[in-house]
Image 1 (cartoon, rainbow, N blue to C red):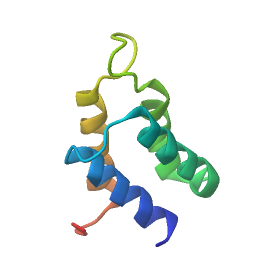
Image 2: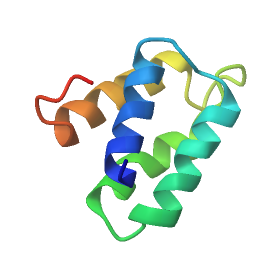
Image 3: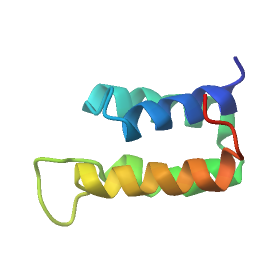
Image 4: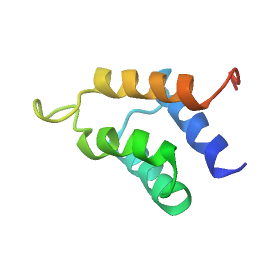
Length: 83
């Protein structure tokens, strides 16, 4: 699976609540840094990934903030693929 497909798959898993742990988001960020750092996808994700701390409160991002980001990300970059 190419990195774009992998990140989209990870975003969908997050949206559906299959994995919302910090380690999961960190691995998603690491994949983006390694393979997509010069892309629009990377720019789209970086703020949310860096601010995701569901227990910390403002100014950090909650789980719901990340769900919205991932939904927007899949809508923007995922096309009609629902895998």
